[in-house]
Length: 414
Image (cartoon, rainbow, N blue to C red; front, side):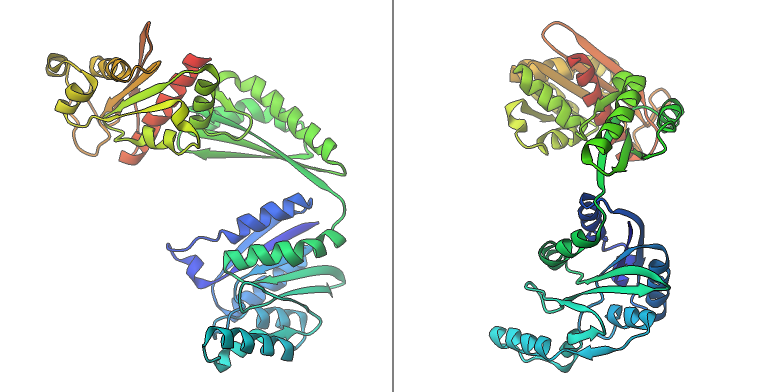
């Protein structure tokens, strides 16, 4: 079976709201072995919603609607679904009484438009909403000679997830064939997407029963594998096989086969070995520290660091000699090395990382362009330094600098 999720609400077509409900529903459907083949976001327009519902019913076995069940004139999901199915709606007296009681307890006078939430599509089963005023609806019907299941859910995430867990999951489980979905992933850093695809496509294309997706984010490429089989063991065996072969092909650029972030991988390795880390950041302005401290339990390995933006701070907090800054400039390999070594000594950490560069858009010179970044790693025996020429805007340069810093430490730990 395949599903389509239709998220209803004009606010989700603005820059200010994001449809998170579909992500939660996708995760739950996948647990049942149902693949989400389509997702649609619609504004509060009856004709557009009706058209979208009709298209969804023609191509998906299960159609889930989120939102559009409220009391206002622009809450139109019920009306659209009824129109597509060619049926009417009946105002449910028990829902009206439940609404009146709910409002009485809150000391609020119920308004006439609230009663709209008691309109039940003919043939639908009411799904009581313990966390809100809009009940859901479940419809098992035949549409154009095909059996279809429709689920109408309220838009507020807490209401939607509770209603799905309490009442929808059991109904779907009873009608969905026993198919199991297994997923796996590979995460790779600072490698071009084109290179990853060129090297791994000849492998994953040998597995037509495994859906492979390649995703590119800042400084990272991800491969996601998904397979459906009658048993979970079969599905897991297939995704693990293609994952293992792709990982072998890509080698050390793969930093995680368990969907861990670079900062998680580095911190877990440090913790396993009883090692510690401190950082001195200039152009990244604390971004590396922020990434590290976002990981639960990071205090066991990450001691902290300093944001040494001004030259005086580089000297005061990381012991960078003023003459080194004067002779080579704040953005230089010599200063990056001194930052890493100085912060390591000051904190007695096993490792020190120093970052200095020009994130832009200003600050460049003829010899030192925007995107020039030095990342140094020091331990008790030696100091390594990367010279990076990064492209993009200020935030991209800063993020890539922090990514390279994590990968430099990971390489050393390997």
